[in-house]
Length: 163
Image (tube, rainbow, N blue to C red; front, side, top):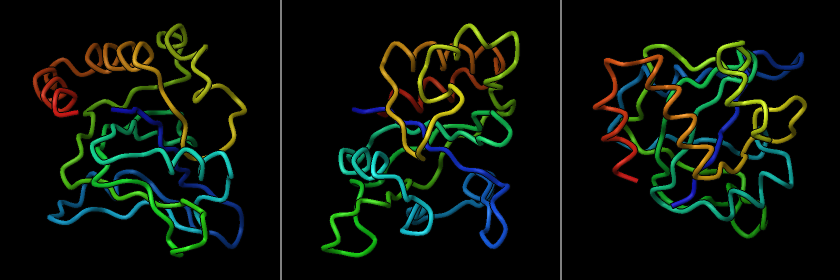
């Protein structure tokens, strides 16, 4: 199992549309949710990382403009090319039923800075949409999420156990 950060931004440059993770978490679906595409993921580093994504990999859903982790998602399958044969792996599908934190985890808050200041995916600046997370980093982030969301302890532990 691999763990990744998937970054989105609800504020974009003029002429482009932003996106918020609540679109994924607040709309129950029975089918996988397509994430990415050529217009969305343009970084060669992210393409290389999506090539390594496998079904069941865990994603931390990070809203970069708010500097908050909104929840957890699982890859429905491997990363793939939205244009077959292009060798540009720019997409992954999330399984239905991701877990939204009741209280999103703030990355830039003084109380959480000790956890996030040395994780490259959350340092400023960090380029790209997809970033790997090591297991020790994941444990620290999940512990922080549980401190902020004690009523969700069972649901978070069950979700992570599925990985």
